[in-house]
Length: 163
Figure 1 (tube, rainbow, N blue to C red):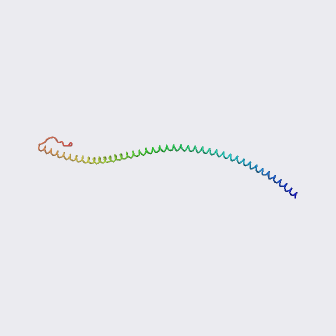
Figure 2: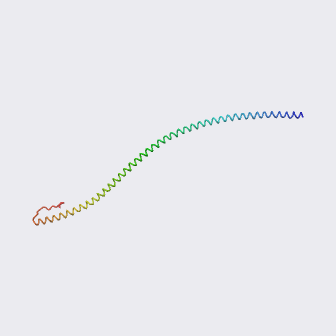
Figure 3: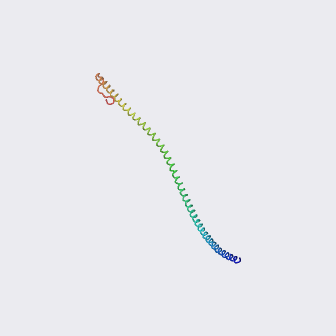
């Protein structure tokens, strides 16, 4: 039994020593992995911070560009609104001018019609005057011939309107 005890103890001692080396090796590997992991985490944190800084700089630059574009846009909008107001006023002015011109055109058309009517009346009046003058000339001429024949008048056979 004693031999068995020593045999068991010696194998246990050898076994414990083997585990200690393995545990030590595992601990060393864990420590190495922990260091590598810490280094990787530090490198990733550095990259993350660099990326955050770069992104913030890009965001700031974009915000500045957006603000500049917004200011330019606001100026363009104001200029366009001023042009619209000016054009609206021009439309109002032109509409008033068109109304005045339409009124003048209506008056001119009425005057033209009146002149045309007057011309027709004038032509009819001239024809009536010519007829009356011819009748008058004929009557005077007849009267003068009668007077001449009666011995009361001599010579002047002229009539109105050059008869």
